[in-house]
Length: 131
Image (cartoon, rainbow, N blue to C red; front, top):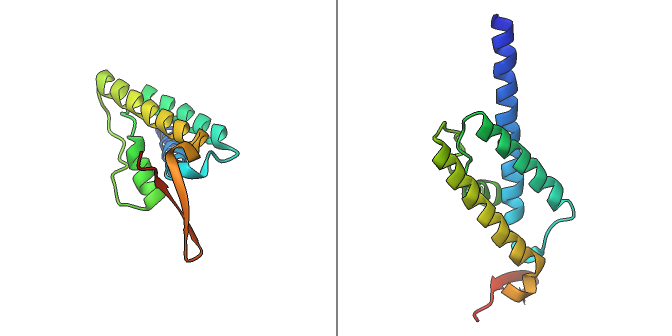
């Protein structure tokens, strides 16, 4: 019995770990929309979506992509704790994450519609257009 419980627990921990890893990778990618989408973007997005569905089915609230972007892209010390939650909270965060992805894709598909590129002492910088 203990062996079975241990095996199930390890499977859940592996799924949680893969979810966090895929979220950090996607978060890092999404902090650079002005560079466009990387070649394997759809693979990273599919991995993230697959593990997000799994953690939701296990009863956890998805972590906001804003947290993954802050930690994965900028290295900020933000919470990546998985918490159990209600169906409403899980649904709302999943919808929020979809909107964040949609915003990223809109910008990354057409970065020059949103960003100006300038060079300053050999360093290329992208910034939002003023209009």
